[in-house]
Image (cartoon, rainbow, N blue to C red):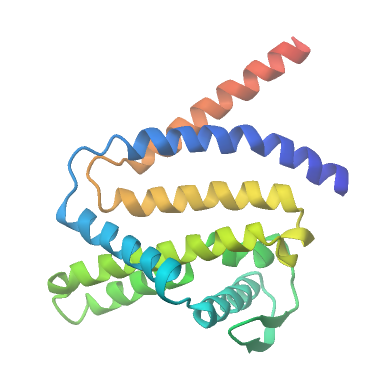
Length: 218
């Protein structure tokens, strides 16, 4: 198992590099920031200021973290119980501690998803477009919240990451978060194209591994 995790870690490194380059090219292609983009940026900056200079939202993070473990467990056909949450730590008992269950809190920005769901539901009952700026601000705020705490968890080498293989977990989390961030930004910036981003990663990854394979065996 250790050898397999090591191999996976090595294989994921080129994808991390390729995804980073594609992300960089896509984001820096932005020429015109729309009103929605300004709301998104404002929300991201606001959380960054709060986190770095004012106060931390540790309890909210721990609650969301353990909730995602529980939700991923249910999605995997298991059961979750005895969830405990405090500002310092949390825990939840799960019956299916698989790869997805363990890494779900680091890959899925739970509060961002909740904001999006609330927006979708309310759109059936009221003219939600009048409040779109508030929701976009909150999406930027909660996404930065997720990224900040995920980065801290990786730096602190949380036990979840050790269980699934630290380096392979970091690579996988990094790639998934890049994809999620790019997807969300593509909704607010007209110059950001999600399909093009995914296609670019796929084509460059395929080219890299095919070239590598030819060098070794052909």
